[in-house]
Amino acid sequence: MYDTLIHGALVYDGTGAPPGRADVALADGRIAAIGQLAAASARTVVAGSGLALAPGFIDAHTHDDTNVIRTPDMLPKLSQGVTTVVVGNCGISAAPVSLRGDPPDPMNLLGERPAFCYPTFADYARAVDAAQPSVNVAALVGHTALRSNHMDRLDRPATAAETHAMREQLREALEHGALGLSTGLAYASAFDSDVTEVQTLAKELDAHGALYTTHLRTEFDAILDAMQEAYDVGAHARVPVIISHLKCAGAGNWGRSREVLDSLDTAGRHLPVGCDCYPYAASSSTLDLKQVTSDFDIDITWSSPHPEMAGRTLAEIAANWNLPLLEAARRLQPAGAVYHGMDEADVQRILAHERTMIGSDGLPNDPLPHPRLWGAFPRVLGHYSRDLKLFSLETAIHKMTGLTASRFGLTDRGLIKEGHQADLVLFNPATVIDRATFSLPVQPASGIEGVWVNGVLSYRGGQTTGQRAGRWLPRGKDLRASFNTYQA
Image (cartoon, rainbow, N blue to C red; front, side, top):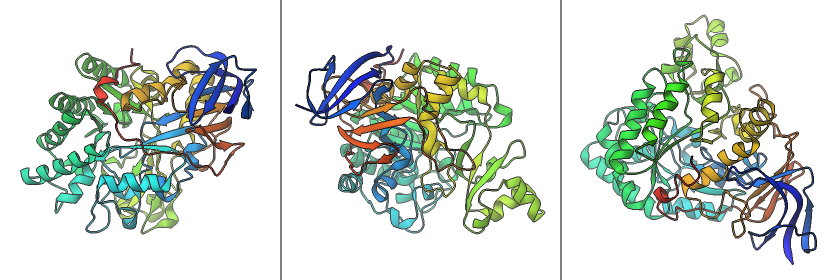
């Protein structure tokens, strides 16, 4: 007797291979059998005819660090078919953190000061287990978080003593299952860190078989130099490198995706490298004066001194106040923004590249979030794969399942395979699509019929079931061994 039997779905196994019609049986949280199982009995039988069954989607790039604990239903992700989130990206993480005041920008994207209550990485892992969110959680350690813990100010390089203290704290986190180190070198809180500081920290990753992920020092004109810096860090530490939300930002950079991807491929001949990407031509973060321009629209999503301006463009606000754009931006700070600063052709070229995973980079604490928070994965399936035919559906699924699991060493996940954990999503390939928009971003996707996390049906019929079965996922092995498992 199986716990669940999904009959007659078109099964995409996550490897990128073409699909096949089969029945899939679940028992004790795992995939127990795959094949023609019409004679089998189960406590729950689900009709899969006309639907696609895929491994649960793995969001390679999130900022859900505090939300998996504070809002454990995780509806923005579960409703997309996401069953695992990787947190701690862009140099900002919920742990290990010991604040002396308010969280520095951009750590404030994760929440206000009370949300940062995990002085050790082990504290955070225990809190995730206690909250039992609806999705599985794996975590990176943020470089900016470490800097904030040990430095009196962040607009300078760390001293040797401060770097040593950061490295000791990173070591402790790696011993408790951290996936690796992330940096956000473009942000003012980390921009003044020098290469020696970053390389010294990254060297600790070697002993633990962890990896290095980076929000590059710039995604604008000097992006190739910033990418080379990332490769140099990875080569120095002898660890894999993931470039976060790879893009060609700024109007002066449009059309450069070919040379950016050539750089990635060239580095990949000597170093395990990859990237993640979200399926939109607009980014979102805090309002950064360095990115203020009239070349493209900038939407204001929140402003502490002027909350009434959320939902308006910076240009409209500046005109209303009779101020230059830069002065208007200063008056709005601290604030959040969506930057419509990419070219769609570049987005498509990067999305389609064989080294690219899918990550939402959603900001769950933004009151007017970028639509990627609710729509990234169905948008890849519906808009880019089905409608634009940018790549096959099996390739799209591979980019958000098997490839991502291999990069982060998520054992027994990311594939539909007997014995693997039963993280699964059942969806309608003819209707799956994102519904979230820039003006109405809080909308669940269409076409997601069912989501199982560790064998537990957690989302069905457009709503959560109330059953939360997510787990803390510590790094379980040397990630160098699995990083290139499914990469061509």
